[in-house]
Length: 110
Picture 1: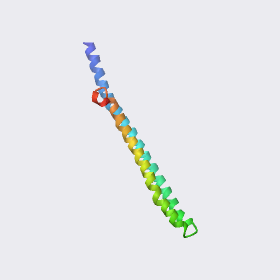
Picture 2: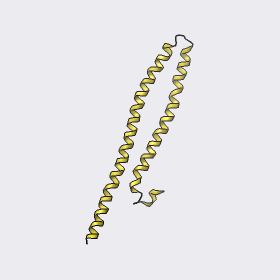
Picture 3: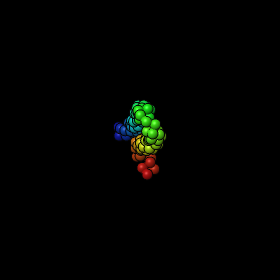
Picture 4: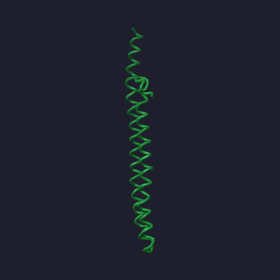
C-alpha cells in the first residue's frame, strides 16, 4: 500500500516539475529577447544620431553622398545578423521547453 502511495506521489511531483521547467525555459528565452530588443533600441538611436552627424560634419558636398550610402547599406547587414540571433534564441526556446516532456513523449526526442 505504501509503495503505491510513494509511486503516486513521485508521479505527481514529476507532473509538477515538467511544466515548471518548461515555463522557466520560456521566461529565460523571453528575457533574452527583451534585453536584445532594448539593446537594439539604444544602439539604433545612437547609430541614427551618428549618421545624421556624418553628412553634416563632412564639410564638403562631395562627402555627403558617401555618408548617405553608408547609412542605407549598414542597416541591411545588421538586420540580417539580428534576424539570425532571434532565430537562434527561438530554436533554443523550443528545445528547452520540450526537454521536460522528452521522457513522457518518445517522439519528442527525435
